[in-house]
Length: 436
Image (cartoon, rainbow, N blue to C red; front, side, top):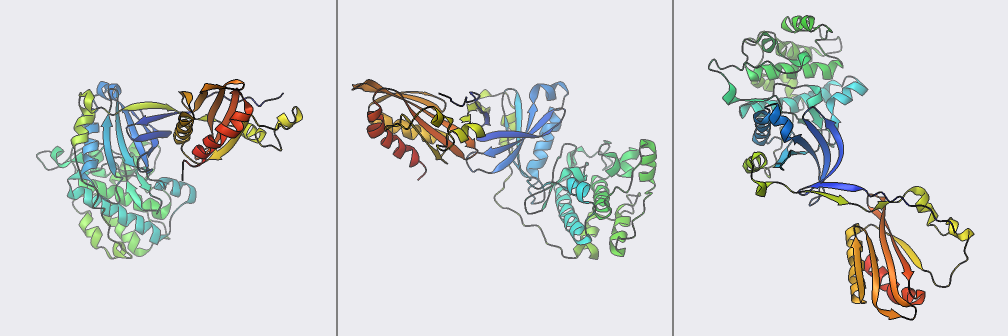
């Protein structure tokens, strides 16, 4: 008799608190970002996972704490929302709202420049977010297309505050003094390292972003870093012919190399080109800032550490195995004739695998069976002996798709008639009715 060989490999899922971790969607030197799902609400999130030992070794603890606290301060519809931060003995977990629309950079890279109205809408959302950050004393300092994400509705979300500065870091002269950012987007005064206004430096980066959205390429590019910095310092760029006069004018005013004469964010908000089709942001009042979880994540109290768990999942059933279970295609039909009483049965269910197993277990207990469980397999044996000894049944749940499972009930020993007429109906009713 031929039987399709099943893979014994189990899919293992990792859980951190109430979140189930999925695929890796980003990776850096000190952090990995993984897609995850809130198991209580079903909402998708992105979890930034940092290795405590690495960040301590490189003395980055305060920088990371600052990034987290910064994002806690910013509750704006066009800034990626930070849900919470958790800590374990070895890891820090930063739970962020997942922007399912991807990066704005990818849209430009694949499709080229945008139409003026579309570019203006993204720019309006960007300026709204940046202005809000500045009102809270927060300066991003690394604004670029790669840090602008989109949600499913196409709304912009500013992310990655890893280089942000808060007003407490401003020196006695009222300026910031740390040179940082991405070269093509950085303001001239940041390069010159003589101190700079964080708000005006951020606005310069916004001007570069607007240029890219309308042109499809960067205003300042050069393989030689010194030449690139010379171009930026002298504002050596030219707007393409397809820019409207109004768009050209606002970009030139933003990309003014002299911060003293550069247009301000408040002036941008009053610009006629900017105000065309403008829609003010709608705030979500559900979000409230709290720093208790930050202290818990960075503290040494094991009582406050988040629980990490590895959970095995049902065995995955491949396409050949699934086909072989079909009566018309099952290779067993070549080697054995139809039996009057079946020794096994299978059915599909969209219920959670744990719920399926638990319901079958409840039914078996009522019928007087001893139960042995291991993950999504269960062996049941009747305490009372029947005509052919103690009836023994094996049950297993297989996964064929994320929300579809095949349930198998198979008689291992004992009376087939007892299995078919007494046990099977109760088990089937229990398993099939679990989602009703």
